[in-house]
Image (cartoon, rainbow, N blue to C red; front, side, top):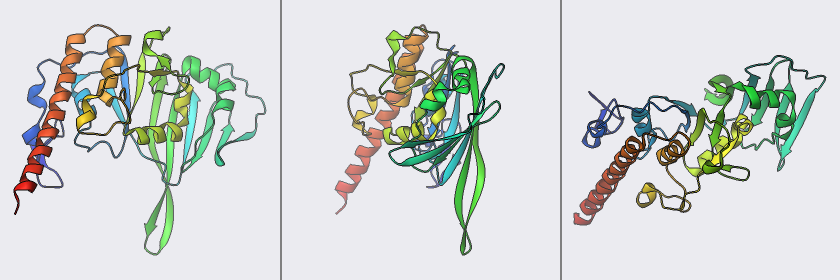
Length: 295
């Protein structure tokens, strides 16, 4: 069953694509029962992008959830609580301030949790949190994270602020973040059981911002893909360099390496993604031909 989008084109309610490029009939197998749970933190501007690949992962993997994330509008507050807070002894840690390139975040320790205030554009330094009792408890036993956004809105002739809960997420023990950079471990070198994988969905610039503005991501081990080939995206969407893959390509590579099995079905999802990219390339060519034919 379809619906109409902003451009009045009929859309498929299931895969969120225009009906002329609907993906649903291309799924030849039931969704994969992935044993490693996937949580996708999706930038709110990425959801409606015509080439967003998570729509395929959502339909092709049973154990996958999506949490929308937005940039910090004015400031945000994060509350981090370990899942097993027993025997924590915080002492009188008071308040500390961490600064990164002149940008401040506010870190406060409480009896069984920690709160972090993040200003727009801040890059929190989490070293003190990682070394604290709550950081160690969160790393070893898992934690819950809640984000409250303080947004500035214009009402009439005045500016007002309001606090809105953006998400609350539970990060169980055995969770890792799929994100490259210094300190990230190659998938082939992982020496612990990964039970849950966090993935960032957005352009590389948006992903970097999500990583900085949601500093609880630094409490998890980071994994990287050592991939040298070009992404299937390369012809229709800019990637910084070879080895920078789309979100679904990254998920498929991670599951093949960490989970094993179901490789044929995982490859089928990649082929489906390739067909979606082909649709976009065809539509782009058709548009250029129409423009060229105009007098």
